Image (tube, rainbow, N blue to C red; front, side, top):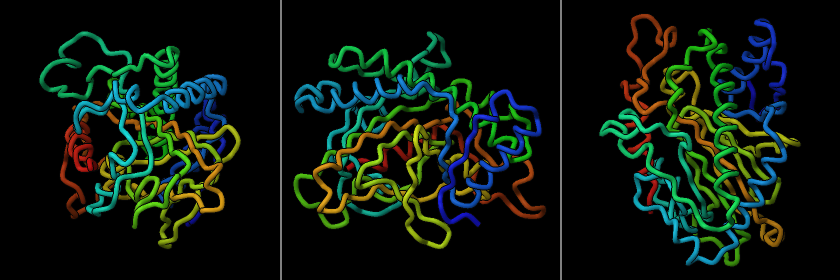
Length: 327
């Protein structure tokens, strides 16, 4: 049983023979089963693009509040735009009344949206709401769009690994994620200027909501921790040129709870390290098509037993969770 988050090189999966692909998928599946998290290297994402996205993001968060508020999130169920410091508490998704989180963020959704009824009709709800783009920095939009596409491609690879790990065909999830309603959320954790309120963290303990999350994090004081099966909070390692990957509640539902969406949090930096603790995270929340049915997959329900979760759809589950986290 893994009690710490492993680092896995997934490069051999790309272009590998079936045996190699299954071996990588088995490593990934073990990590997800045991602790719900892994760190991947060999992901193939251009490090130059990552650096440009980080620089543009820092430039946006350095703007004054009035300019950032020009792209303020318009409503709790619209996952677009700017969310100010302490305006959201992800811990509330676990039914815990805690103060707002000590981060601010900028969110976008799908960037290549056809002008058809599936994307704009009543059933689509607000899942394809137009993105809200700041005027400054001017390069931000093109960079975010390119990065969103890169994350979508990486998520497809990871979902293929998940399928093989679950003894399914490699393309099992393909038709369920080809119109994905994912979000890119860039979070800025400022260096604290005042002590936190009781129970207040950079991000409270929560589980993610969708299929999987891909996180690019900086190695700064006040980082990510996960709750392992021994009920210990353990730090997630930051390997060079790596991504942190974890599953969300929808993948847990698909596996009938065999894979669990692990609680995690972002802790406050120690008082003596506050000065150098500003932290930027690029978070890609991968979510299946809004109409993708989410019910126990073949082979996940023991004979004679009922599934652990009621069937739902990706869109309905996500909408409900977005609203619960508002302060």
